[in-house]
Length: 154
Image (tube, rainbow, N blue to C red; front, top):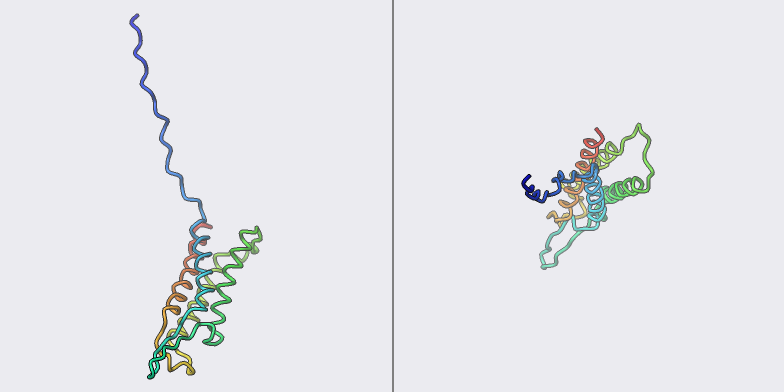
């Protein structure tokens, strides 16, 4: 019998790419959007230049109740996520995704009201600042996080 040729070295079998951990994108988006929404209440929502060249800026917190509510909605989204991380969950009849969608919808409505209707006391600063648009994107992000959560729960 002739000697057998040595077997070629076998490579280990290829493993499939690691799937994304379910729920990670909804969680991350909820954390980031909630944090940005809370912080955006302290950014400039209105800005303008007076006749003597002085530039004025009004932060969201000073625009009245709606500006304060936007901050507390962002804070509520953060608290909801922190409770979830701590292992405290809402009752089964109240899904977290629905709460996030409701919080994001409220924040979106409040920011849109302030985007369309400038308070009477701030006519000197009639221009909209970047902060109000950041608030709007963050509020829409909270809605998106709730929708991602709802899709992951299925």
